[in-house]
Image: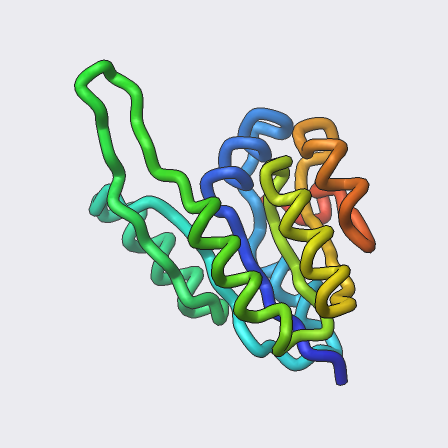
Length: 158
């Protein structure tokens, strides 16, 4: 049985599925798909903590599915913009788990991860699977991975 580590850029998946489909991502279906006939060595969902009740409920659902939820505080700047980027944290964790895994699954369309995916494939010969909304996922990320799986109706809440 192959060992898999799963990493979900929750903000990226939330905003891209909402933009493209006006729907939410189905984390239960995703979990069943990426863990089928595999041994999970790590599963992480990276999100922002605003502390509201609905968000806490969502985080508990993710935990119930099997994800370790990693939270970063939501930062609202005086100019009206906000910050809550997990790219460095996701990168560190993927680098840590690459040597422990046969397969790295990343749910994100962020092109900043292309170099990381190329690096772990070269260093550890990992298979990589990227899940993202097809036309909102960076081509560089699609090209860097072993397999790109477009998020479509099968992975959306109906």
